[in-house]
Image 1 (cartoon, rainbow, N blue to C red):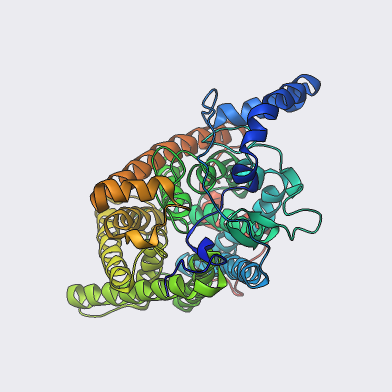
Image 2: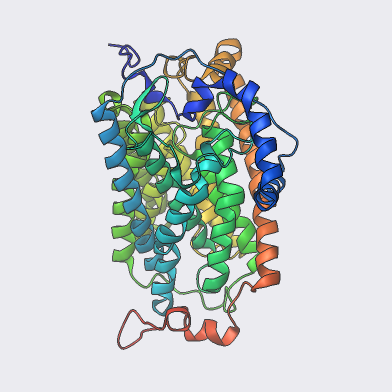
Length: 495
């Protein structure tokens, strides 16, 4: 049976447009501008906020509607909604998993601070997503291909009174479960950036950076790729991203690279670089990430019946990457390491993320192996040039996401990119094949690098001017667990 043969399950290969983008286009054309004008005139303060958000994302006056797709109306399906809820829980678990993964790498006096940089975002970004983040990513009030709107702040009217209404035509999952699922992605993405900044950035600076970056970088990226915007299958570029190669990994990786360059290296780098203080933490974190990634990629199918497909490609790529990394180490250094095995697995998971629903198993194995090899090389280059991306955030997520996104273009199977859900992408594949799709992916990657790098730099310089970025040399030497949180992970403390 074809993967798309069941009308109730064809939704499995797509990120959703917000309901209004598919159901109410004609209504917006005739009604939105007068309503927005009335809103702006009546509420000057809100008008200023809207203009700030639009200008910060570089949007005014770039306003354009998304393409329509002829999708079938269908009632909410309990199994599909349950997949989203379970997937949300699994993706949320990835953030504590990331905390263990990163925490194991740092010095013992900084482990709590490193873990809190991830764990804290479950509160900060969790609230921000409900208040305004989801609306900026998936609303259509601004009628822009770059940013959403403010019509679904506080998740207002998302899925109706009880949240159980279908997301949109062609999607059987509830709108509220989709919003929850997307919120988990919003939480972990800035957490990935922290790996480049550990052991030297102040927690106050991290608070403001994560908040502003989520608003002005992450939400526009989600809109442009998954919300019917400029980069995605309904936009001008027509790129495909199954579960976050550009939105999550390239965005976080590029932000990590720029952040590490602006914040600067640790005061003792590279003279006194020490090995990871707790390798079992690293293995535990990698295991939790691998488990959660089944929700990250698998639930992105949006249909329970066919979710096993991206589950399988995800696992295959991670396995191939782990094996590849260990074999490279074995050949190069004479022994495979536990840290290498964990890093390789994560690299493979990053690489398959944009392709998980668009390729078959042989391609998934290839993506995992090539991503691991590329990330391994990037780590060696970083060490050679002595650049202090502390935990290889760019080398794994930025490089891995880039390799995965480009390989998605080269290896995507046209039958897995249906025209009803991916109109522009399917058109590109039909007209020019995988080479043309590669070009579209390259354009999306290039745009993402530029947008994220510029946005990240602006935010960091603003935060630096207002609250500063770094702790003092003395505080860095004392350890950020005690300085930032008044706690220490170990007694007696081991430095």
